[in-house]
Picture 1 (cartoon, rainbow, N blue to C red):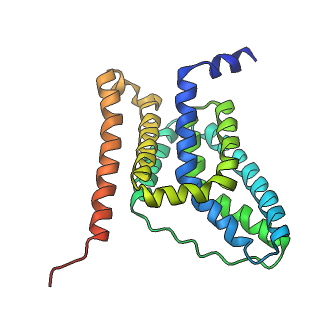
Picture 2: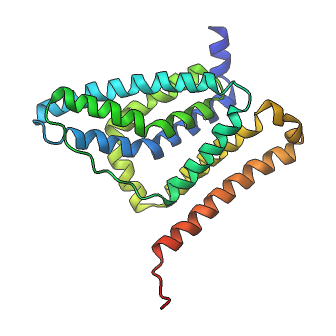
Picture 3: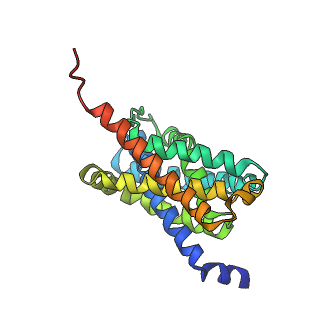
Length: 230
């Protein structure tokens, strides 16, 4: 209990929790759309139950998956691998077009099953990101994922509208993901000698964030700019 209280009172705990909340906001919105679409053909009173059961099942699966990933990240070399994957996720967040074409389920349990499976598959990036941001703190994992419940169920539609109105939000989210990825890499034990100098360590984290955002911005501009060449 004392260890938990000491963890919660740490500034690192709150900065990591803030990172997890931002990650949940930018990565969970699409999962909420899937939840809504899978239940869209059911009666209104049944939809609420489907969303409740489906989201509950999805959150349990996500907590279990994240705890497993937190454990696996302790294996030598996997922090680097996870960090590199997360850098790619941060880049894709900026440039990838989302596809929300999900078939509506015909009945209650089919809709619940669709939600749990879809969220588990789509939530792999979220699982890795939250596990990386938690830095091995299981309490932080649970708190962060419990916060994601109201975000997924109630806040996602509003947040998606905010992203459409203020695209800078998605760049902030991508930056947080890139920063989380860089912190995972510098925490790898066999790389510790390379990052003993704080200037090198923080310089690497800053450069990682800048490169991901710059690359994402340039690729997105290239995609959206009409080709005028003949």
